[in-house]
Image (tube, rainbow, N blue to C red; front, top):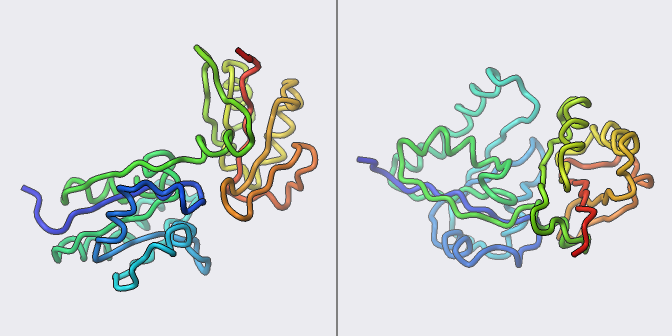
Length: 234
């Protein structure tokens, strides 16, 4: 039997505070402890999204999950970073972990879940992901009828990206950052660059939509996406 506090992973959406679900809002405001991650020396995006809803009397736990690490090195760091959350749960306090987008769709909460859900009662609240938000912000229908949609991390090798793009009707390419130039060149090589739509920081006040060939590769953030909608119009 699992004892201690209850762990909640809540999706806080892609950036617009009004896209938070009612369930996530209720849990956010009632939990004694909230936890969120950020890059070192940077403001937490997840906390910023929900900041206007915080009651002001909660314990806050900040943790860091460095990206682009070798799996074995990342594992030991992640094990260490979840310890403060585990301590609160062990003391009987419920903890709400904030996650941009959806907790289980490339979400940082997954690393908390795999380490603590076997020990403590856990509930995950889905959130609106960038995969849903970006096409809407761009004003382009993503898929129709039996279209196949493929989600691709830009970090994949060139040949793998080409293979998947040739086999799908529509695609979302995420985690662009320093991989933007590689992806742009692939899209031109495959003759689908004209269908591609670039967007960064969707639904936030910093949202930008640019033609693919006008994007400065040196300025592409991690939270950006290239949307390739289906050719069909029904």
